[in-house]
Length: 280
Length: 325
Image (cartoon, rainbow over all chains, first blue to last red; front, side, top):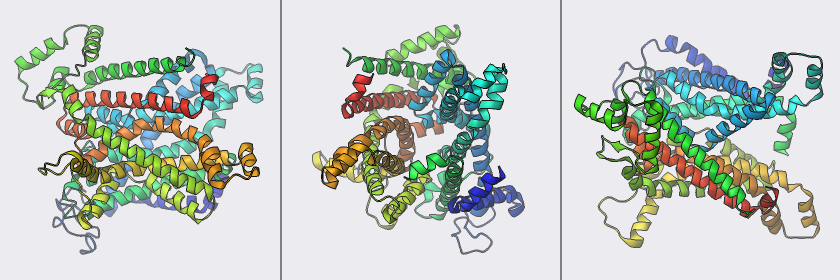
């Protein structure tokens, strides 16, 4: 694992990505220290433009809330939703995909129908409907994003399991009379982890985008400041105050780009054969 | 007969998908906190007890669940998607009024995404590793990471607030009273920003896909043969490489359709485009569940229809599919 990290750091764009990601995590973790005030508190004059008052470098919004503080607290929501919903999706996807790929048959057919269903329907609208009906909160957003994003993981893991199952080392384990549980967890699973890891890192990025879109539409957790909410709330005053929606959007782009860079770097390191083919 | 078999399979699958959506909708309305009758009347609606009792009776909420589901199915098969007590109109009527605007926007967005994506992808694949390729890849990476609604807002700021070139709001100039071609031109003028915004995010996707797909085909034997025959470069790219590289792109277009419709909700909200997405946004704000579930059902049907179309396009683009299946 440490050699993976080392090779990742030698890839320039991945190294930049890791550095920036570390910075974002740091800001998210230290938000209450950097900005002891509640991000919802009205601390300054409303509609204060950026770069005019050193106390509020990025200005204030229409209620006089500090935009920089909102960005720092928003990082917590984005990272939390991105990581937890992806973790849920991966646990669900690996479990179901593994069972379908290993046992085949009816379980496999069933899973394929379900993933096909999710691949067809407008998943964003489905997620919106779920959040609206379960009542907007950070938990329901995480659940909704998790539910719509596990199927690709399941498809990937299923394909890996199905192909690894017929390989010699697995056949040998079967011949030795190892239990299914042992074969699945100890023999096959470790060999499928690297593509899952790559997919997971890219899923965190798209989960952050989805969370931002849900909050933008006014379905964010009403108690937590998020980037999507900041853009959605200030879009009606965009003609007078561009900075209120500009900075949160810029931060979303940077964070998502950063995570994508790390994901692609991870892909280059873990799947060198695929990476070379893609680049040709 | 053989020609039709894969199509009927596709149709059966589509019916199964729509039926699943109807069941999901039925379950979702029951997941809503509190009384489903209250949810149907709109969470905060001024619904008195007598009205709720009437709703409960009307929807058979006192009967067993499977019976309720059967009634729900029967209603939808008769195109009855329920009634919006907020807007005092049937859900189907509300959606049908706004469907043309959404279709116009999504189809335009799709054309922008596919057209521009193909162009950039081809340009990129033809100059692998050089400056053009790097720039295009950077552009794709950037737009892949940008929230669609934010691109829309920034486009409004740039093109309508600062430059004043394009309208940022609605589908037509209010009160202008244009007819015929003048009206079409006015709508087209209003369409540029929303369709560009919706398309731009997916341009990134199609660019990457086209590039990868072209590179895959570029070094195959038949391309080398064509080159050895002395065919012109443009002809080889069009007839030999692109035609074969198109297949995964068409497949992907079908898969992407659902995402495109989801993007339309955001785009319509940003640009006040009078379509289904805008309707969904208003329904979200008012917790108007019947409308929301209706939008989910109708957009799913849109995607399923689009998938059938891409399936047919796929068969036309590659006659081998028929034989293989």
